[in-house]
Image (cartoon, rainbow, N blue to C red; front, side, top):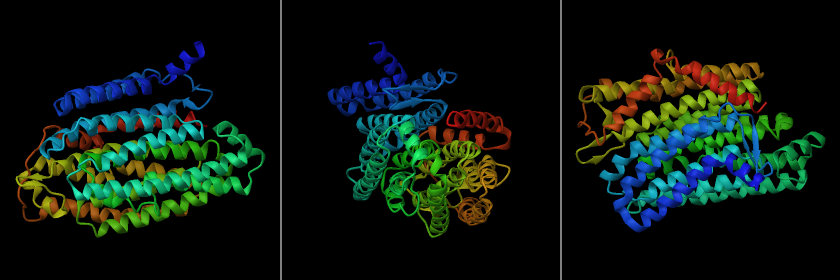
Length: 479
């Protein structure tokens, strides 16, 4: 009994969110769509409350639960906090959109809760089986969210495409996991690490490659990115914002835990794969974005390129690389959610618009929104002195220290290509002839965009040291 209670206390945040989701599901089934707003509010409170609750254990030692299937360390805590706060913010900025588009359903917030629980299990996974359970709980929720607008043919197509390709990636992942289990004789990360140290067979290396390929789908790494532009465009915009933030953070954290933990001794083998994924993702992401006229498709390619930069830090295979990865992803979350708040505000009197040309002359009709949008674009492009510049700088420094100078130079050169289409959006907002003005669907959108823009400003540089300290503490728990 004592052991069970100890295990339960280790997953108390996940258990609390699970009970909340089940309670809200029953309440929604009984009350119908009338309960949608209150369910959304309770979900936001639950996500923020659990994040604050989890932060209280920040100073605790690393703990394992359920026989080592799950681990609670500072890396998991850092990732869980980012995931929970991202989920809460997505619910806040998306409520007005769903109401105006008449697709308010009580299941929406519950699916976000369930996806968040799956991501929390993912980042705490210390066993291949718990990894897969968390990954599938997240994925199944996201499949439904992608096709949430059932009256939209485009959304249905996005959900179906995401489901089919997601099933393919799950097959790759399971095949790789079965090979790892077959050659290591265990699914526990600690046992796999011992097997790798004693005998790194060819079958084990092939298993690692398949596992990495399956997980690369979740972060939209090339060549596993084919779902991303269509799903980003077809899904409801708040769902797209969710896809671009929390799941990416969870998946890249999981990949880092796997590669630098049980497969750390195989760095010479998996580093080559990660470098190839990074180069391809940056190249396809940036050059693919140049041709886009839809803002959501552009953000899809931007996301692909940004995951390429994250994998530069991953390829370094060191504690400094993991610190740079977490620091970069923290800034990426802030910037991406701020940009999607701006995109959600792109509503004219006749309805939502997504074309980049509809941003023309925004500086004249909505100067505050145009300024926030511009600052966020400058930051994600990596222009100094905004915070995004330091995120890329940390990654390049980690790559140089890891002996990957050429990869850092390649990433820096491609940043110039990325700056082109980010600056093109800024040019359209400030210098083109005005398009019809936007109508503000919710006060939370300009507020969120303004707050995100403030956080990337030089005046908010208190954020960078704090984020750096959290990243260092999280990375140290893995090494």
